[in-house]
Image 1: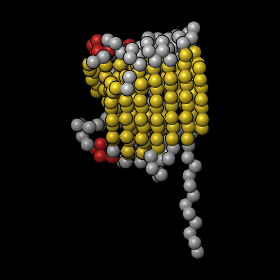
Image 2: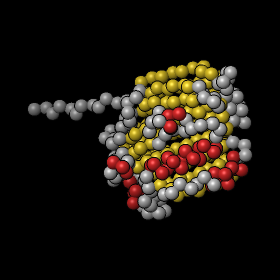
Image 3: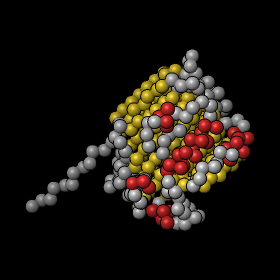
Image 4: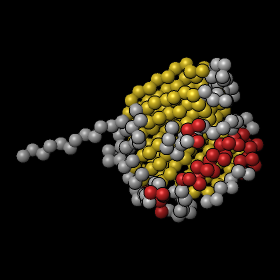
Length: 270
């Protein structure tokens, strides 16, 4: 008897692209493209539009692909986020791949503030985030990772994350952050994660960003969060670690509130 081949699992693929041009409210929609599981919604905001990306598949597993992109024309300001936390589930068929590519024209500003990514046991996620800035453009970039949900009693014994973040200006690197997190990091002690199961990086690249170091440090008061801020060469970089995702989120919200004008993204407040 010939054995039947194992069934192939259906994979999720999505891509969403938003292009904004100058308009009466700071920017207006020029182009919206959506494919597969990726969606994008554009809402008016007090300081430019809010773009909200959504992965309708509900999470990522091995073989899934997801791509988000924003193009801001010169002089545009916008905030972009995700509707909810992204989830990377157990991967039996290789890695899930996420690609984020944003560009900001001259004099423009982008706040890229996705909600946290939650990694589940045996997940395998490869993600590349790149923001290309014009000569006098600026951005605020956030990336937050949660290793399992403590409130649900989840612990990770196996995980693979390759997460590369780049901020470029006129094709030259401004900030490059390659992260490879493997299973050994879960028990590697204080030199790596220690007891932390949630961590984040918040980076501001803008004229005078390094002058905001003391203002940022004054907000690093959340109990249970280990943090540090440094400023150099027109950059402010803040690192955060916590044993759980909720105190980390509270600390992030406090920092974002002082580093950008206006209220937090609306989906953060739900």
